Image 1 (cartoon, rainbow, N blue to C red):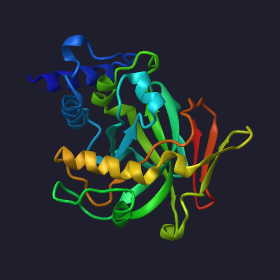
Image 2: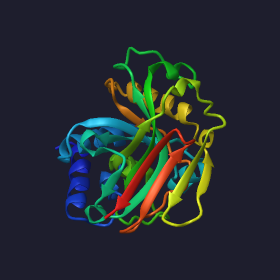
Image 3: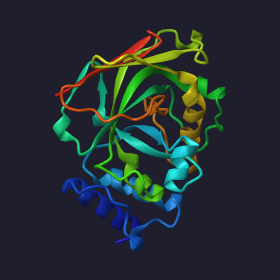
Length: 257
């Protein structure tokens, strides 16, 4: 059995047995990010959650990167069976350490592969068919955030447990995303606002695409790519009702049951 297979087996076992998140043991720690992505691919193929329907970014901010001892973001996969649509009821008990993030999701309009052009914030607009507000479900397995190894986290599919999509933004090409604001409504709390451009969503989209293609991994038409949270991750509890509104153009709503 290869080292990356051993890594995937270790992580899958921890998930199945609901073991609190732990960094990989020294003999299984990937030697670099490329080996971590190979282990991630084996995890995705063998964890029993089906095929991928999209991709995500994590550790997009310098603060998060410094905390995890890495100087760049990392990417993971979203399983097709874990892409849901708003309004949605989240079964709180089905997750081991659940967090919510507040994002934009982009739908890819064409098949992309290693022969595709290199993307940036401008030309990436040409391969988007829809944009949605979205929640990402994070499963951190009660991790100690002061002790997270980025290579272990990357191997563990960057903790993605799925996404909930709002309605697509109509005529999104005519929307000024530089001034667009989003609003988070959490139970009866005062609403919390954020500016969409703070997450650099189109730069992020280009980065995720370029990374995956550089690893010779295709991105099928229709894939959903989420582009980073504009509000700090929050841990919900049973009974919470949470709504995320992007400029009154797209709304995502969940209830924790």
